[in-house]
Length: 77
Image 1 (tube, rainbow, N blue to C red):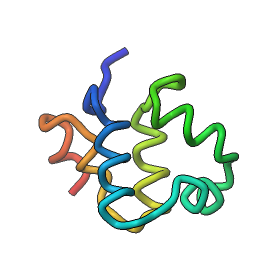
Image 2: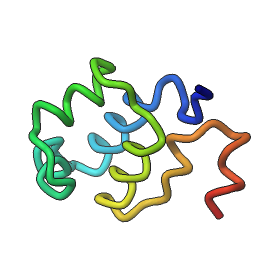
Image 3: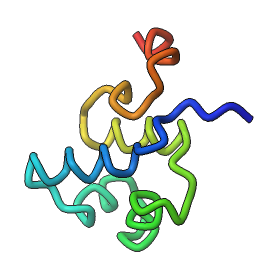
């Protein structure tokens, strides 16, 4: 299976959350998952795949493009 997310998507998300003063627990609640599960995605224990990228982007009200490899960003427009 082709990976469409950036290899460092979890770090990108951590940086975004920190720079916007948003807690992981807040986003987890918006997504309907436990903070532990959210943390596992962010820290690479679970695969940060396209489904998770789109879900977290929806919860944050942002484009999922920041988590996607460049060659997949056009298909999001």
